[in-house]
Image 1 (cartoon, helix red, strand yellow):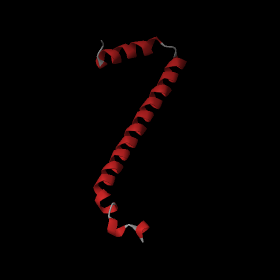
Image 2 (cartoon, rainbow, N blue to C red):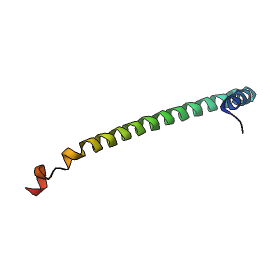
Image 3 (cartoon, rainbow, N blue to C red):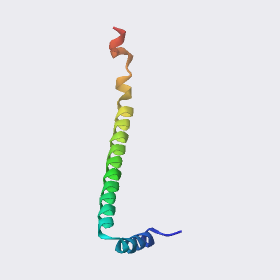
Image 4 (tube, rainbow, N blue to C red):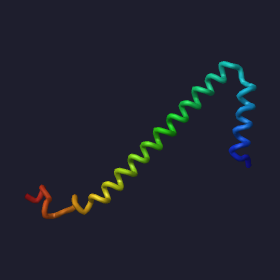
Length: 71
């Protein structure tokens, strides 16, 4: 099993063997992967944050005395 450092080294070697137009394709794809990763990471943080807020406020929200639907 290869480690990350070995994979990066081999990736650089593979890139050097590619024609220029394929290097540009690979570059575009790598940028896409990075943007997708960052978007998912931020979305997960936002989701987790909302869940924590919901849990913290549940005692206030689940209050029978102030339930508007019971009026």
